[in-house]
Amino acid sequence: MNIALVGYGRMGEELEKLAPQSNHNITAIFDIDNPLKPDSDIAGADVMIDFTLKDAVMNNLKIAAQMGVPIVEGTTGWTDQFEQVYDIENLTMIFSPNYSIGVYQFTKLVETAAKLYGMFEDYDCYLHEWHHTGKADSPSGTANKLAHILLENLPQKDKILTETSHIQIDPSALHVTSTRVGKVPGTHQVGFESPYDSIQLTHQIRGRECLAFGALKAAEWIVGKKGIFTMDDFMSSQNNKK
Image 1 (cartoon, rainbow, N blue to C red):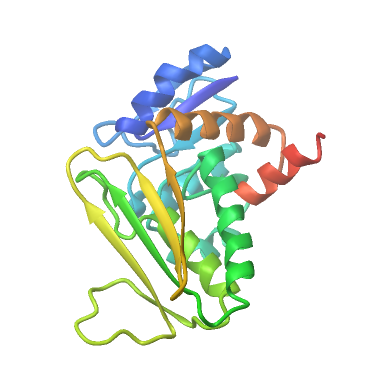
Image 2 (cartoon, rainbow, N blue to C red):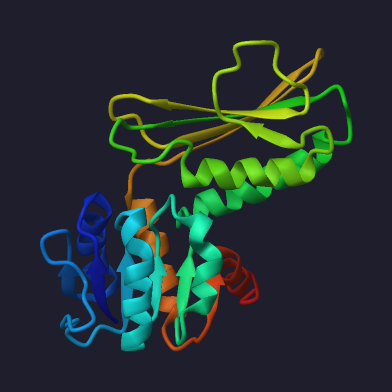
């Protein structure tokens, strides 16, 4: 498979390193000094993988659609514009705020736990995440996704609080907090607290390899397809193989 990388930061470098191990070729690389344009030469790429900045996403999606090339979108912080992607003619894309297969399965564990503990008013819930100081958004895209999963499945919560609570917190607020420090690996923890016990579910990545691996698997999957997909579609197809 031939791949064009859009964005050449840490994730782009990781994809460039990992792709040959799966017998894939990086045929073109675009970055801030060589941005993707409608007339760019993608050197026969079968798919694009985009890890850039939120302000560049819509433009990159439009160019991919014009070229008729599917795109794996991994940039975070732009989902307030997501409904606009359905107006882009001929767009084929898969989007996820986190391509880690381990994180995806973690979201399913969190969803199940929320349903189980949400049945009892005695259990309160929180979400905290840690990332390195270079992380551009806070809360992260993954934290936002987890927060909305919790909100959908906890009857006692109806809003998200991402700021410090300077007064007694509203019991109906889900407190979502973030730490940015050093080179700490991306970590997400969901906790359930009652007067009687404490439960924590934690996911921590070992490195960006897991994100690159998942993005490459998503790229393999979307080649030859038409439409707009999410990680749910990709993972459901893997389950159907069994």
